[in-house]
Image 1 (tube, rainbow, N blue to C red):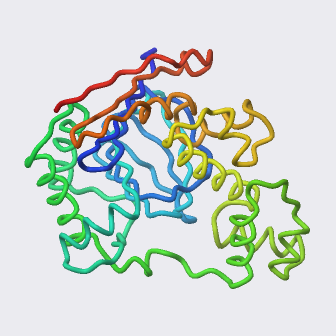
Image 2: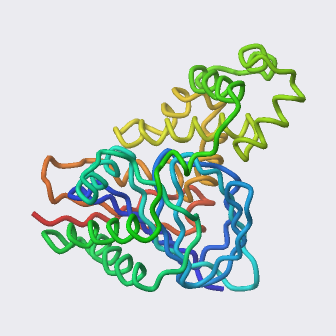
Length: 302
């Protein structure tokens, strides 16, 4: 069986993360991100659920997730999964969209799963450039060409990509985000939202695609990512974000992100104040299971 390999690079010039997963068999539970995801399937088939829709994805499919899109993915068939992807923060995306459209607005996309050969021809070379540590004009041009083609051919206003939610559910989410560091109980959320427990669970799952508890854990992981990027140790990040212990934190972080917290932190460690500084990390599933995850690959060009 092919060994699982996970390579992650943070590009200082573009301010985006690039992921390369090879031979992956790990399922990803229902969760969401606070950033955009633009991905490309190279090998293998999976069953993807996103915003109450199910997709059979395979080689050639491009995946587009907005911030907040709940999604899950499990392996189908006997082959492993190879994937390339970019994570782009909302702050960076709004700047890119302004360059492309002249409007300082977050873009929305008409579908979460598409096939577009022209887009694939833009996405893959850009991904190779980031992974190989390329710098300069060509890489920035490719990113803008990619976003321009996405917005032109598959774009729509961002508000149309975000489903309307009942006011009570938005209040429940507000409470969770305000108190994620604490031990939260269902009756607290219900009192704040003005719903019974059964009504909250039904409505929340319908509107958000995940349960309130999964929403809480996803918020905690997202906040922990920000702390790890600033160099905080995983044990401290676990405490700061409300996880009961480091083991619980590592389990959730690895399931949602595909990397252990220490590996993710190392990608951003010792960042030099240079525009062309780049970090990457390669990891295997065997390493993750043993938590022997200290090996780090750093590439930079000045």
